[in-house]
Length: 325
Image (cartoon, rainbow, N blue to C red; front, top):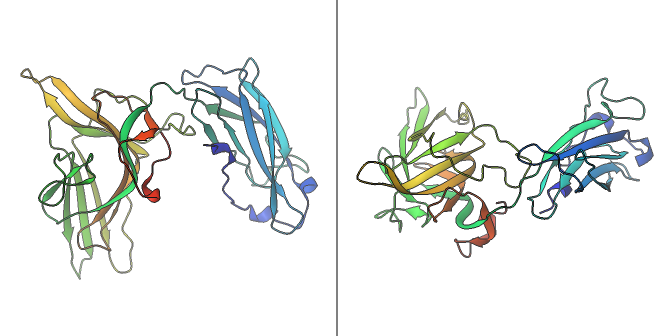
């Protein structure tokens, strides 16, 4: 997956002109590669892609520069560019890592010939491929709650509500919707996500270390820190869109199907992760539609490193295929 070849075509309007690549300012970038212990990685290739002005108005061409990191894990790459460059690396035995380099388009962000600062110092964190395992993984899976003002269990393995509302067996996640409609005060709704077993729960993640990596979420789930419930509240009317959660999570780690021994100690659990926040829509459904991307590891270990070649969900539609580990 060539992350570093992806580029958002965000135009810097103040710089859009009828010009050639020779008129674009030069971007000098120093890229340092580090591992998860923040140790420098030497002798690895780094690629930078620079969008340059084309011959016609509002057209672009892409120039690729590459080089190997030195003993300090650093390489210098330079080229003229009109838009944000992208940098990336995908060496053997590591997950691809890459992102855009921000350009300072404010006053003082460039001189006649260079983007400032020069050089721009950037760091990419590379995560090693260690032990990918088969998982149940699905992207942006939409589920419509069967009703409101009552709990409904959802089976992550079956991708369905538990009986009698679906073919599910285990209530891994429990969704409860309280929805109020009031023509005078407006409408409101509260969505609760809870669990069936003691010691089940989720951990919201707000800041990610090495989010530029394909493996952006932690590879190992922790033993402690799980919350038994997550609650979202919103209000809306015909002229007001539903409000977003107070603090949006970048993702979650979760634990389900926990079994305790006779002493109350954990005997067995399944672990998983959720990429991004839960999406929920209450204004266009009689109840609510919840959409989320999740991974579930059934081997009872806290390993969250997904093997993309061994998805336990067979024959998923293209729009629901998970493409990152």
